[in-house]
Length: 333
Image 1 (cartoon, rainbow, N blue to C red):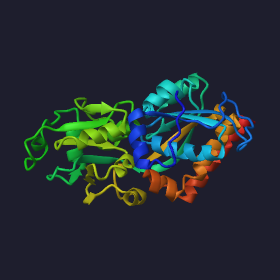
Image 2 (cartoon, rainbow, N blue to C red; image 1 turned 120 degrees about the vertical axis):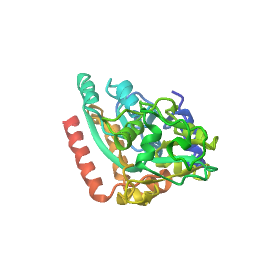
Image 3 (cartoon, rainbow, N blue to C red; image 1 turned 45 degrees about the horizontal axis):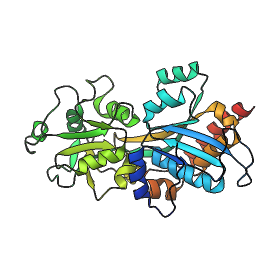
Image 4 (cartoon, one colour; image 1 turned 135 degrees about the vertical axis):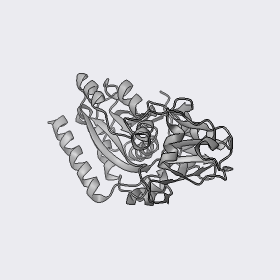
């Protein structure tokens, strides 16, 4: 992988645009080495950390990695945006990465695959997201969708082909849909919260991508488009697309950090995770990065202002740190 640091002069908006399109980034320190912690004379750590998984968590992981490497220039962090499921299946559970970011919990089948390969996943909650439904800025017929309307639009059972098929007051224009692939945790969470696990499933006649920036571009480019993605990418593109409120039976609620924090934005508020490989925590540079992430998970500046998610509160942070320290002790003992 090409090693490429995001310049401090580059805005988070520009970085999300570039990284969201590329799907991978190498955040290299001044000194590189193979896996295995050691002194480097700058922060005392060196080695490589490999991270794959959720595109939703990707910008948060990137922000943490950038700051960690400011203090530990000998640590090389490779980040890939593969989708939660793609990360578990192709990278983490086969033992190829040290962390897997995820926008939904690991599944029993994934845990079984990890176990077969000697990988013990340690679940760490790192933030809260408000999954956001977006439409084109020129869409003047809808500002809010009920959960039922949202389910109808995306259901595989008799999927509507026009906006007027959903609501006769809306234009007789074709629905153009953009969203994540079935390797994405966002896709899985959308099915769980909107379509139902036992429902007819998610329609497949839509433009599917692992790159959230592509969803933004697709919706921005067509008056008839609709899509969904993590709040961080919407928050960096508020001039490009319009977010819809969601009515879960108690009136319309717009996605925001505040409505996600209070739990008012239902059912699309969700926890975000990173999963650490316990064996990797035996290496000091990996353990220290995990600690660093959680120690900064309450940061309003990083998590909310820079990336666009809800930070952990101190109680939740302490619970996650205790879980991590237990895993580190087990790995290093």
